[in-house]
Image (cartoon, rainbow, N blue to C red; front, top):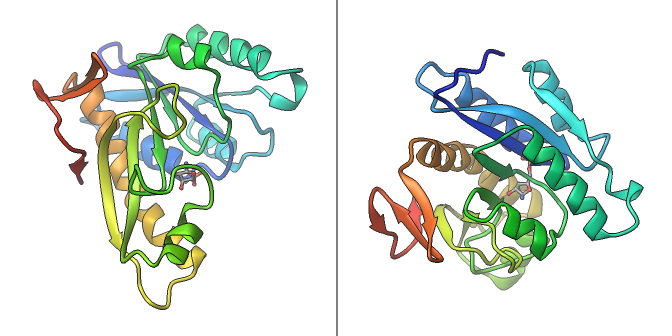
Length: 216
Ligand code: GRF
């Protein structure tokens, strides 16, 4: 893959399937794309997303958290590896590790996460199951800037889907995931075009403070 210098270099962190990574790869290879994927880093050697990256000719790294004695040493190595690629943006796309405050501070304002719920509802794990159990009629996904509070950073944009009576965890997850694949490239594109910034804990989009998450 050739990297044009006027495009924003992005490092993507994954732990699993990497379908959101795939959506980013596809968006980044369009002619008009404002970003390119500089590297993909996984904490799991078997993550399928590593194969997706390799197939697209993107550099990959595995930093296996089980090789490190504690979170601080893992996060230090992870942070150094990311920095070595010189990214303008770091995207957590199904990266299943809790990050230390020091790591988050290092990438403050230039790290996004996609979370499968309408934040602030259902932070943490098993969001689809919990949404069904709670009897909500609407569910979705959110992209937010990463801050020290887990799944608690300022929410930039969301997609919404209906919860249907016949849904189980997997049908609902699939409906949400399809929309995630539209949401994440959209937000990365905004950031890459300098339309989106985090300043003084507030989100700025197109020169205005965002009062509530954009609905995509
Ligand atoms: C997505 O649902 C994402 O929101 C969550 O983890 C899942 C990752 O899926 N953080 P994939 O690896 O991108 O297919």
